[in-house]
Length: 287
Image 1 (cartoon, rainbow, N blue to C red):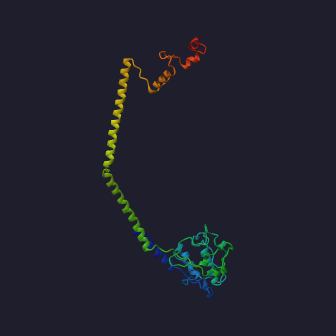
Image 2 (cartoon, helix red, strand yellow; image 1 turned 90 degrees about the horizontal axis):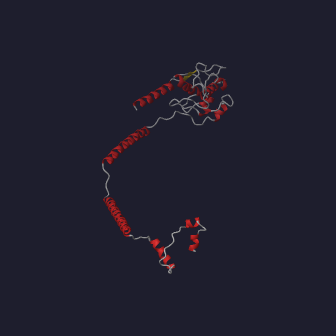
Image 3 (cartoon, rainbow, N blue to C red; image 1 turned 180 degrees about the vertical axis):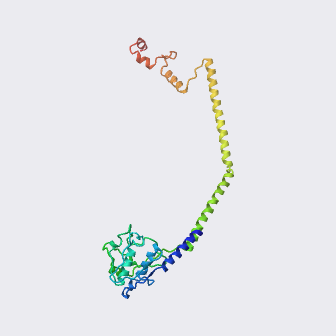
C-alpha cells in the first residue's frame, strides 16, 4: 500500500511539472477566443501540454507569416503527436495566428500508428481539452474551423478522477472482513469433528426391538419347519401317505364321481404314453 501511495504522489507531481513546463509564445486573435478552454488556455498551450506527456517539456513557438505546423519527423514520431486531437489543436493554433494549416494525410505520414478522435495516453491532471478538438478530420483530410466553432460549447475532456478515501477504506475493510470470516469457519469445523454425534435413545430402542422380534420370528419358523420335517419322516417309516391339500381334494372328487368302483385302482397311464401308442390294445381294453 505504501509503494502504491508513493507512485500516485510521484505521478501527480510529474503531471504538475508537465503542466507548468509547457509554454507557447503564439498569440491568438481576439476573434478566436472561443477556441480557449474553460481555464483560459489557448489551443497552442493545450497542444504543448499534451505533447509534453511524451517528452517531459514542449514549447509551441509562434509561426512566421506563410508558415504552418508540420507533422512529426520519422525519428521523432510518438503517440503524443500521431493523433487527430493534437493535429486539430495545432491547426487551430495556426489559424488563430492568421497562418495556414497542413492536411491530415501529410501530418501522419511518418507515424507508425495513429489515434483517431482520441488522445492515446492519460490526460495530464488539471488539463481541460476543448471538445471541438475531437472532430473527425479523416473524411475531409483537413481540420474544419467552421465545424469547430459550431461545437465550441460541447463538454471538455479531463483526466479521470482519483479514487476517493471513502472507496479506498471500503475496499480495505472488505478483504479483512472476508479473511476473519474464513478463519472462523475452520474452528467451527474442528469443534464439530471432535465432538461425537448425539445418540437418539428412542431410535436405539426401536432398532433393538426390531432385532429381537426378527430373531424370535426366525426361531418360530425354524421350529415349525423342524416339526413338519420330523412328522413326515415318522409317517414315511409307518407307511402312511401324506398328500397335499390340492391332491386330497382331487382324490375326493374322483371317488365321488365313481361310487360303483370304490376299490378299483386308478390306471397309471400318463398323457404322453397315450399319445405315443394311439392304437394299442391296452387303450381298447380300457374302453
